[in-house]
Image (cartoon, rainbow, N blue to C red; front, side, top):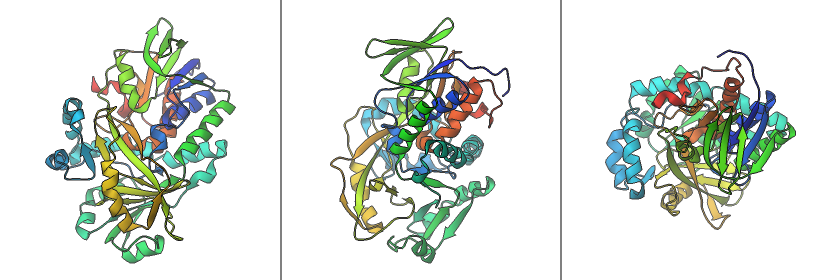
Length: 419
């Protein structure tokens, strides 16, 4: 995309990884930017992930054959997805579009847009970390997907085919290789897949805070407040806050993660957004045990990630209504399996953490002008890779808003593709 370069005033709604990145990149281009967040930067979705900057996330969440797993999901037969009937009405409106993307042909088509984003994920983060003085959070040891049987590993042949297609470096590991890389991992795995080009961070919340401080250092402004409606009026865009205030700027960016879809409805820009819920909890490692990089037990449906706060255990997806009470049954189910894999001790916190991920049916984010609008922009819907792709998404949106040539083709992420 090219055009006459421009700057102006902008309000970015949401100070998670995606919103902060949008604000930084707009400010770098001379925009007068206010970043609006209801609490503190990075305290919601961006805080709770596994800390993985996943270069290998080139496939959508809807996988070939997923439709045949629906009975198991609905009856509680898998720890990978827990379904609560509080979400029944909403999921039935969303699931058909999601499931139709679960073919190899659709996966290949959607991988073009996903690969373009993740190709730049580590470099874009490193650039911001250098500016923010936050490189101490970064580890470039990759991450490992582990499989408890040869048969389970063989089921991932299509994933490896796509990694090869996009030039993502990986190594197939046998039990001896796993023991050399992770000596404190129990010898229960038949195979491992070491994604070499992936990186990780040891404190996603602290990284968001460092990026927010960089934004302020660049001259940006952070305001506390919760948006409840957005719209356009003449040559400006407006946001109504739940405390009765109204703010205006030439442009507004909706980067509120799982809250984005509901807010956009107030502006008549309806997108098929859905919120997946997920849990984590931190544990001490027993004795002198260490974990050198995040480990994804594919069969066990959990991730163990070394964090500043301890070993973070994350589980799969919970499908429930947005404000359904906390029900960490998945976390409880995978904890014994995690202890089979690694010597986890006591938890370091009183309660599990619950968060929500913003998802769209094709697993691609919505980056660009909101449908039917010229001054309201969107940057959300990154499902499990918001931390990974926040900086590259923020850069892409800022380039589009500024009329610059874009680093990647923005067409796959056009919010109007669902019209």
